[in-house]
Image (tube, rainbow, N blue to C red):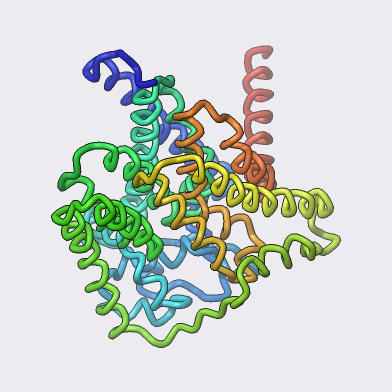
Length: 402
């Protein structure tokens, strides 16, 4: 049941919890950068040495991981330095046609930096924290609307996409935040904020169009023709940008398995082995299986919840995400929780919101099943931070004793 607390009294509470989320994220970033990256903030982008960064960025002293292909955040970092492909950075980006479609965060960072290379990586990190704030704010708003404590806004930090946004500078956390915002705004009378959000989602990642499709279908079913028109128009800027990217980039071939769910089951029953030098290899394999089972649990839970609901924008978005994940069969991506976890985070967020509204706490189980693997991936950072805390505490005690 919705809370009886007047909106003006509820707003400050959720604002404080929303501010706490990016503050916690920034504190973690500051500590791990100091301890694990020698103070180099570009370490958060996980830049590998197999494809070196553009020579024009040499003065940025980018933190490079040796013998590593890096991770997706490095490409978005380069895009933020050259959002319109005028400096040729796209020629050194893996799958530039696919990456450049996801322009919103890099473009926002470039605009905030005034196009100055020296400020781009800082503004990109700031933009990421902005979306952490928005995700927590909208989650708190949803919680209060349904009579829950606004502290639930901090649960946004537990989404795999939020974790990779904070630790690896990927863009999927922004789409997860916009998905939560979609749930909040779609429950009200449609307005310009909703349409801006939908257009932004499609510029964060192509799967943002699932939100546009869900709300468009909802409007058509209820014969809200004007809203349906505005919903369609919201996707036009993204389509125009995609066309621009298509004309400026080379061919990108994306191979998928044509049989739905086969890649998921293949990875579940053929969990990859790790070389002996990988610490706790068998534990990591078990966490891989648990995370993949969590993804399957999320899809099963979505089917169970949706069949019990009326056709609302949230339930339609849940259906669209469920269908997409069922037919998205990139075998390699389904072997890594950092890939399928962040891609599926909008579905996890929608399930969590539904569970929060109805008191169905088992909706959070799929997220809990993925967190151990994500924690193991970050274990080397945790070890470094804990070692630093211990040595700092011991040095302080020795000074006090002396």
